[in-house]
Length: 317
Image 1 (cartoon, helix red, strand yellow):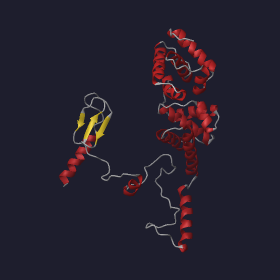
Image 2: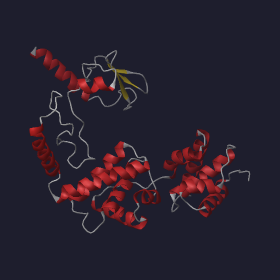
Image 3: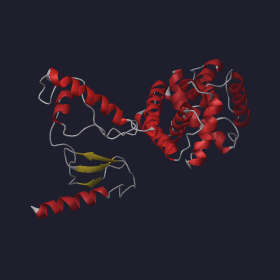
Image 4: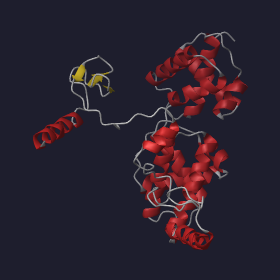
């Protein structure tokens, strides 16, 4: 039995070290649990043919079965001030067997519930985190941001609290700056205007706070690139993938001729989409493109003229 355990342990150790395909060096490895294989998604090479299934030994066919059979609680999260590790007393007034709690004990359970709530938020730092993380979740929901960006923003805010960078600044502006930094870190950029609109904070204050956090926390974020906005802008304008690919080609041509230096990425993205929409017979007006990109029509017009003249593009007006 011990030998079998050692073999399985060595097997796990060997599998964990496989991070890329030995044939094409791709890191996109898929687990085929039916065959017990680890397969490269790029070239199809079977990297390991004796892969151990690390999932649960039970199956569930609906959410109720999954909840009843699972033996673990909710995962740890940065979005709660105590990281989701504390416990709570249920409001149902029933014991572990589902029976109603006697009337004599309800007052005691009520007092325990009240003290539990007080203990969860014990000092000023935890109160700050509890309020800030709630606001962060609300702002991210308003903007439709995914969970990974919310977690990343929560980590940035926690680091700012640890270094005592919140003092003298409003919680909302620091939360907004953390969200802006997390979006840029995940290559899902949002403009300062979009952040300010969703958070009801001043745009200049968010930008000032972001620069301060970036300097003090050494975030080392790269400047946003125009092509990172293309997917979202084309989707909001209802344009096809052809328009997006054409706009991406225009931006790459502009990069080769060093035309994007010193220009706003949203304005360049808007102008390239405007040009490609005309070339692909899916025309959108300058006003429509400018509204989606949150820039002025003058900016779109100026970038449009520069790209057409410098790149020699043929556009039917």
